[in-house]
Image (cartoon, one colour):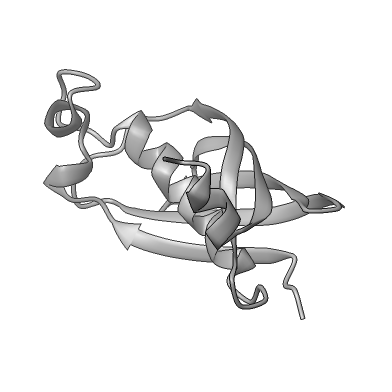
Length: 122
């Protein structure tokens, strides 16, 4: 059975900072890291697919609202808001340990046949 919401949390490391990733010059949680967390949280909701199927991200719209330091614990929740055939739409929200929203957005994923998808990558 498909869950409609999933939450995961982690602690920010030096490898997720803007200065490390080259997306900025400060040692704070990088927007690309936030986007990756949000996409990963959504992807983890679609792991019970039939054998030979997976999901791929096709769109993401994120606002990074607040800086977070290395060591901060971030919690991300993805909630399914629509299912249209093979396409799933998610609402995303990331908060810090104080419950302050640090990012929010939407994401879309499509279920694909792995073999067929990979054959088109060559």
